[in-house]
Length: 327
Ligand code: GDD
Image (cartoon, rainbow, N blue to C red; front, side, top):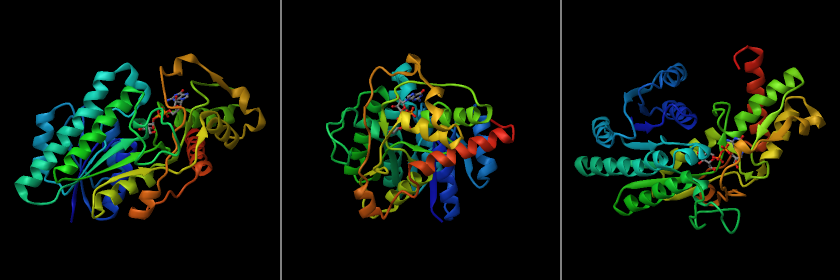
């Protein structure tokens, strides 16, 4: 039975990854931070089969020891700062946790492989944010890396160090993930912020969603599909970089319209959306949309849910939570 080690197992992607790996018969070990009690309880309720270990991305020596002790065949390094907005407030912490910590994980994996003579295959999740103001779209694996946010810069470092360790003989795949959503998305991200508010507005008939840049175009897919791409890339015979995206792009305003309509608001949806400068960012990519042809060709991967389905599933979930009094 293969053994996987997952950092960030309590996050959206970590939870779906634990589901998939356990379902396939993989032994799953996850690293959790002290104080993450609610997230750990939720994770154990959904996937009681995971084995959890205390650890912290910021503690390089502890992380190295933990990886050596667990001795995994596969490592998925999903932990780190995932909010681009937050990275503007905490650029140094973001550089440490979403950038430099990747080097710690990969170095520990490489040492484990050297010491045991067993292959250790790694997944470093890269981000569309590494492309920043790209000159062209859709973006693919050959698009120049030119980040415009502290988060994008940190992920760019992690992307490059993944390539360095691949060159050193470690199987390190990167999935260059475009936005991927689900009902498990925290409210800090625009999709869930919108769907939770839309459900409320649909139920009560009033209310306003205060948003930042309505014109930003993003490529929104279904999170479990993206986790599946991670597993495929780790198990593929050769390690490489893969863009993981739907190829469709929509504005934030279009997301809000679709969500509010789904919640039953109809043509008056525009009355329920306002721009609040508090949510504008100092700089950001105007359009991110990915060409996942390489993942389709080499990994046999394809997205299973289009934009309308992603929006629909999230709004329906939030309406259900409201009905059950759990929103
Ligand atoms: N969060 C947020 N809140 N974003 C807003 C808001 C708001 O009120 N109003 C507009 N936006 C815009 C942002 O400016 C951005 O253009 C877009 O909505 C999406 O923002 P987020 O949902 O916060 O995600 P993100 O695109 O910054 O980052 C996500 O996708 C990346 C891959 O492209 C995260 O999942 C990253 O971890 C991931 O790497």
